[in-house]
Image (cartoon, rainbow, N blue to C red; front, side, top):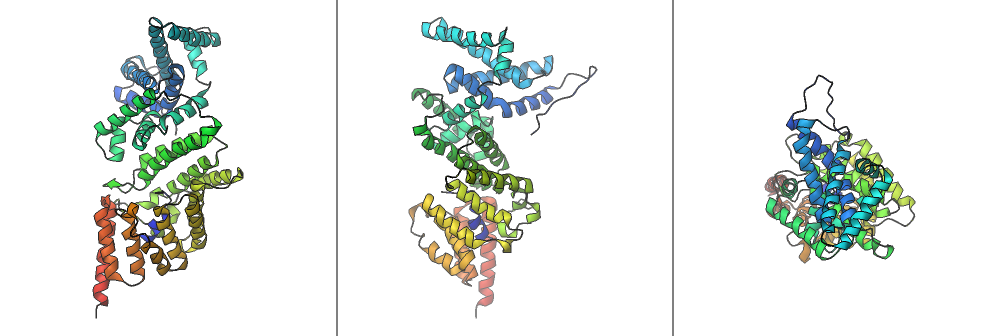
Length: 459
């Protein structure tokens, strides 16, 4: 399990909705100003709109297309007509009207679909005297259920992992195809294909637009949490590119996690994941220097850690613990992050407790990466020789063969043991394996330092 709480490894390598105010004499907003408002509203409301349409149409792909049509209409009409008082309600109204038009067209060909039109339209008209008023009233109805259904549809296990990630960011995050492609450093065409295939797969598999029943909920929720975890992890430690972090991905994953926590308040692992992301995000300002270079955990200025996010994270962790079912893998990782958050100085860190928590994590979610983190925790608690002994056992594990953090961690252990020539070779190996430019620079600098130290110690 690769983890945004890989603090041990890192240590070892030691909204306000915008509005445009205008009086009667003010000019109409510019197209650029309107586009900014539309983008902001879309980011916040696209999930609600698509979820409502998917409930009507039972087709996530069709729902997204009609929601996009409403977005295009806003970009075309608002510069000339002015911004509506309720931009989100306007988009919802236009999108639902288009959905009703589509259902009316189906009515001409299939009686069954025609009955659905009558039923949906009848329900809306019963709620208010006219369709526009009905749609506005419907904004407050079943929103939570619609969003939860959309979450489970976008993250359905029938989709490959990369398809789930792309579709979640598109439908729930409101990101464009280009934004997703830039975030993951892949061609835009690749992301577009993933999204198209994901929507086609959901349609062909006839995936129901519903919250899973109790018997399936655990497995399906695990898929949802995994997607948010992967998105956050890529933002927290970018796997490739010129920047060490991609804050936009962290922000989207955390925002979606907070939404999910409100939709599923009795699920401890949801709160555990939110706690983990809140606490990790608290360090964002301290993790990167003014020149963009990484600042490792033990070297960070802890005065720059965001105390509000830490308090939110600790509260989410307490919420998970109060449910009384024990912490799962995300909750345990949050508890590890909390150990760092509570330490005012690096020297105050309770590495003994962190090592014990990694022991627990290894039981809950065994993986070579967890073992590597456990090796670092052991080294910090009991000395580098203890860590190196465990890390050496991982050298032949196939899953870590091209994992740059294994030689990086071994290099740190060897340097602390005074074996600087060996450490230099390990850091150079790690630098060759990483695809992140900032991390490569850091590893090469450590290799050079070990090389200099080895020369000085040569008899």
